[in-house]
Image (cartoon, rainbow over all chains, first blue to last red; front, top):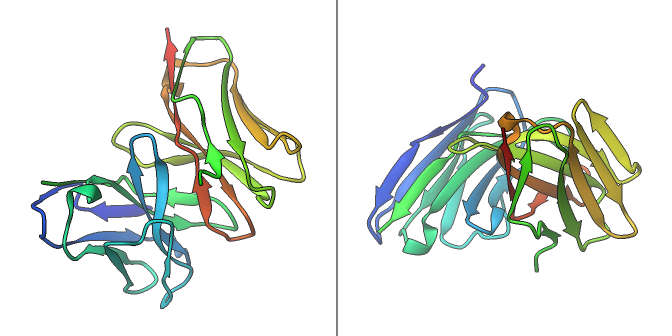
Length: 111
Length: 112
């Protein structure tokens, strides 16, 4: 039981490049989330998926797209990376009514 | 508009003493509050939570207090241990299954 896994752990991109961050959970959770963490800003919600087949915008969705491929997997895509997207990205899934389980994070640098 | 605020970026305490981490919120519709702990290079992990119908919840060395009239919650760690050194985030939600709003985090350092 691996919980929430994220790939890659680290990534460096040049401005304008695209990439997809992968997230998978093996806990049979319905809801999944993508956050970004920046110094002094806490965790901010980018997109979430309440169930397979649905996705909704969070607090900071601009510049990102998501795909809920199946119940296990929820990917985050940057179509044209910008330096402002340099951040640590966390995927999470929700158990029960409240608690969310987080993955280990992807540290992304955009030059 | 920062609905959940942790005004202290850092806190340093001696091992064995009490650590008190504070969190303020502005939205009176929040009905559930959570604390997460985060070590470097790891994802946040759930620590303790409290419903708005309660004013205290205790789990071992960790106690969360909620003061609804002041829109304030606090996390008490007694006694503090060096392994408690981490960043602590408070979070709030508005309805069951709703999205979580996180504070900025407080970095706790417990010195031996």
